[in-house]
Length: 273
Image (cartoon, rainbow, N blue to C red; front, side):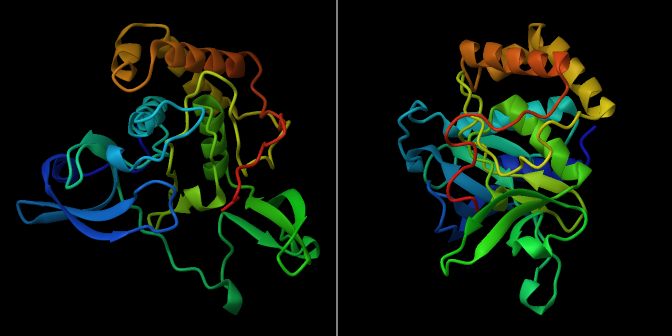
């Protein structure tokens, strides 16, 4: 079962309620709008990405990013992990697009000694216990900094999901700790390519074994992908070849349940946050 089950009434509002634009996330590559879905006196905050606002990419077919977000959500749910907030395809003020439940996060105040984000940077000599260093680089002032992430099983579950999804864009800002205590991943528009595209900031577990409980869920996913029902659902959003590549990735992980090492010339997305 998902970790944070959605109230069915809220799910109905998200699917059928009237979308009212509240604002825009201006740093996003594609048109990303914050909306309220409202019906029958209930309101649900959400993110709306109209298909017409998707920027063309050289390696992903035009107009397919919303479908990839939906398919990624369905795979997360099929695993029972609840990593991706409820995500649907529906019409909106700018036409059809992806609509995803908004995740409220606690405020962070690092400048006053507040808690680090799940993925963060710090001076190399200040990496705290319980955090994993991914790489070292120079900041804009030329000072050495470490890219780090929490050694947190909630975050590692997301990292395993990214392997299965072939996530090409796991930035630090796409891993959110909700006020409910769950960890969520957002922005899965460039996932599920047939070719290896894995780019992530979550390399701290490279070479580590994957927990048995996670692998049990992966085994169940392989069985579901080898049947007819779940692939038929995914076919509404991604191609048959992409579904087969998904099954092959999950099967490979089943055979060797170890977190992979970075490969290729661009193992980390840029920018990293």
